[in-house]
Image 1 (tube, rainbow, N blue to C red):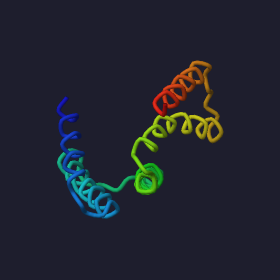
Image 2: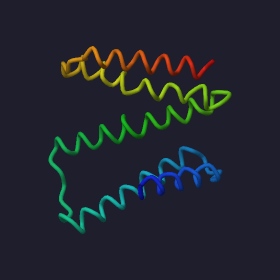
Image 3: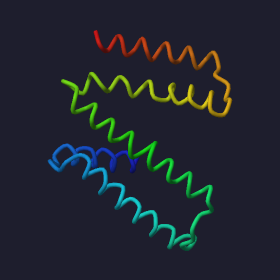
Image 4: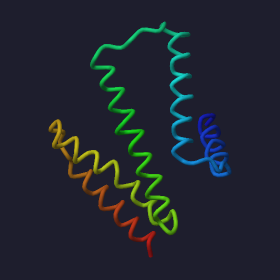
Length: 128
């Protein structure tokens, strides 16, 4: 519950902040990196990860956090209301499953497709 309160306060403050969205993202990631480094120093000591760990961190930083957040900000700016874009966020996990299926061969279960139908139905219902 504590992290939910912190997260809510972050978004409330974020709405009032008039700084450019890209600058805010950069500052959030920069300070987050500093806090992670500090936590590493306090818990396990500072050491460089192996090549696989470093490549994984770069991938997550670029594709799962950085570029996707920039695209999300752009979509919000281009839409008339946030309601036009927010329904799309529910489809992202299913798109990820499809990518993972083709990239590493993970099985897509029938129950996943049923869940996708419920989500699509909910998005359509919300639009009406």
